[in-house]
Amino acid sequence: MLMKTQILTTSKEDIEKAGRIIKDGGLVAFPTETVYGLGADALNEKAVRSIFEAKGRPSDNPLIVHIAKKEDIIPLVKEVTPKAQALIDAFFPAPLTVILKKSELVPSVTSGGLDTVAVRMPENETARALIEASGCVIAAPSANTSGLPSPTKAKHVIDDMSGKIDAIIDGGDCKFGVESTVITLAGEVPTILRPGAITKEMIEAVIGRVELSPAVLSQLGKNETAASPGMKYKHYSPKAKIVLVDAEKRVYEDFVNARENAFALCFEGDAVTTPHLTYGKENDALGQARELFDRLRQLDEKGAKKVYARIPSADGVGMAVYNRLIRAAAFNIIDLRKPFTLGVTGQTGSGKGYICERLEALGFKIISADYYSREITKKNSPIFPALQARFGEDIVKDGELDRKLLAEKAFKSREDTDALNAIMHPAIIKLCKEAAEGLCALDAPQLFEADMQGDCYKVITVTAPEDVRLKRIIARDGLTKEQALSRINAQHGEKYYTDKSDCVIINDGNNDIDIQIQSILEEIL
Ligand code: TXA
Ligand code: MG
Image (cartoon, rainbow, N blue to C red; front, side, top):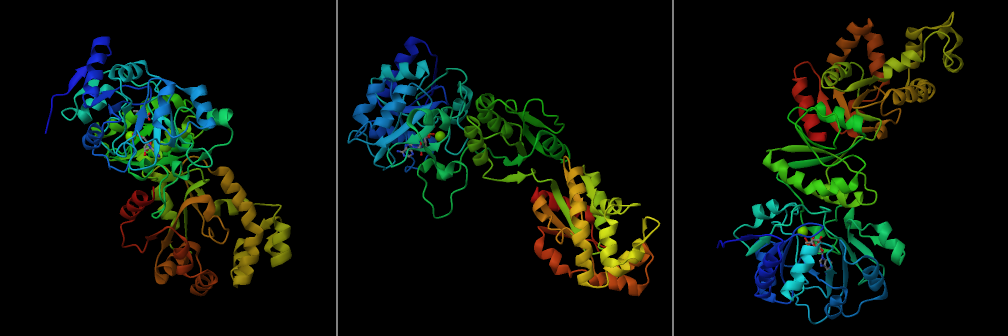
């Protein structure tokens, strides 16, 4: 059933009008310094129920009770504990919500059936004037449809709530743009249930050690109960699928610019050429907070399907930004802080080189372990004495390594191969890591033997049937069939590689490599 929603201003008359609506059991959306709230008389059960209806909010998710004066908390709670009092004195009015054991006065619909109540005194003048005008304490969740990003502009509220509530007070853009910090003082240790503009550090400076609920930074397990019921619901989610990319500026830029059809949510000043929106500047958490929800809404307006968002720093107020964004992304993170984005490995003759050429065309920097293994075996290399000690003086002549002879000796048995690796790998790994920058793929036949999988975000194994590999290496390296076979037999079997890798590309000459690569990138990145 649709009703007419009045759009009001912040004038005295309009606030009085809105106050009367609340007093009479109606619903009014109003600005606060955090986000817009959807308010009703907190002590009127019927009015409170209609908040849940208008938002489509699950009834076990409790509401925050908003007060206009500090002392108005007293009748709502069993006891204002000393720590609660200290926080009230230090911060109220502020973007801070305290949870205490509730009094009989607070109806169970308001507290979502819990024996505690959340109370906050907003800093925003219009919000406090409305509470005063209504003569009530006002229960108000964010004024969005449940599950969507919280509204930070009157337009957002109009989009979500028109026809469902009595009035909306247009108070312009919200100052902070993320919801209040929620801290519970109802348990043994004060615990932050939701980070906001009042940071953990600011709170600790007043009341000493506080904990951060595990639900703030990580996904709750299936059987864990949320200390704050709101944490268990899907939140801040636009329709677009968001993936957080944990990477420095340069890597992030390469990454999004290399993807077709990708949409980016980045910082001002990022050199991004794909369609994008920005949310603040890299080192400005307050600016990011102010813009984030609006941008999440705009993503849908722009029809973005898959969005790669640059990860914010989680320090200070950044914790609140990170917390909202990681929920919007349903905890999907791509970690590009590892030296190598992809590792590409596989048995000899599987055709890793070709896969790497295709990746290079897609914008990856290719780092070849073979290249560095030749670099460290150039004339008069400091590594020669160690090689000669193990494989014989004759593998070096006039300062030059006899590669063929070394290969023959080293690939004769597993033991010989291991000995060669123990000498070569540390030096090669060092050079590969030094060369790593931006979006890159490590081409390393011995990726697992060198224990480098931990340095790669994902590892791809390239496979091909033995007869195909045999033909390839005979042609490529000018080997006899026996030499080629002995080289193949000195290596691990295919399963050794595929078991340890994240995905497999079949390169038998019949499969369309580009389609396989694209679908793998789609899946893992
Ligand atoms: O900044 C804000 O806090 C905004 C403005 C309008 O004041 N309000 C807001 O309300 O964000 P809402 O309902 O969207 O979020 C309140 C959060 C929810 O996650 C809820 O589960 C939690 O606070 N909460 C409320 N009462 C609680 C209680 N008694 N125990 C634990 N968590 C509670
Ligand atoms: Mg909310």
